Length: 337
Image (cartoon, rainbow, N blue to C red):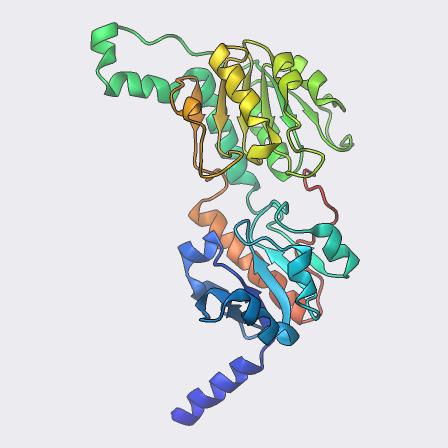
């Protein structure tokens, strides 16, 4: 029995190593056992008593891949310490925490969550839109606080069907948002890096023009240098006093200070926000507004999506170590589809 365990431990030590700086959310929820494989072993930096600047040089020659998430950035400085690294696998759809330019320069492949989160992200975006337009959360507070009895009926919400919906980023999530809202009779248009030949929705190359022709904007694109604060004062002004904005992308895509000003002054009608510029810190003004619906960056997270993500992450790593094609390679720096 002891010999069998010894052999298993030795075989495990001979496996290629995958660096894990911090456990991603999916691992925290599902546990490490979901990532076990006979193709690789996880090298958990946080378990070591050594500081990172000593831990990495000690293992640098054996690390061939990194598993990361938004909480563990992969920078050029980190890559310089890992000369044999050939793959970065992120357990997220976004890649703004990875220096993709440095990876490409060094010949390092990158994979992300692909379309694993598309359905759940779209469901959440549509839910936030409904809540913001129909005032569901605000009306719920009105009832719970006894204000229905004290102050009477709550103000009416707005109809969803027939609304002009502008989608920023018609990738996996954005496309599923469009399909869902089409079923409600909404009129879809979009902005993306490129016009999509496989859809008939009107395309706007300028986000400000899209906002001017929309009753609601839904942000589904990735955060890049090009999309940072893309939703600014000009765009929000174009959306107008009756307009609503929903963000399930990244907080910094919107100029948050300008968004707060527009919501407080009534320059736009409302917002449904799953992401924020400096998470987990949320501007105090947003907490006090009844025309804002808030969610703690959980739009794409469900037990079902986490299980699918785990399978994809392990599948990408096993494919890499088996010299097979990667399942969800990141092709370039912008992942809005």
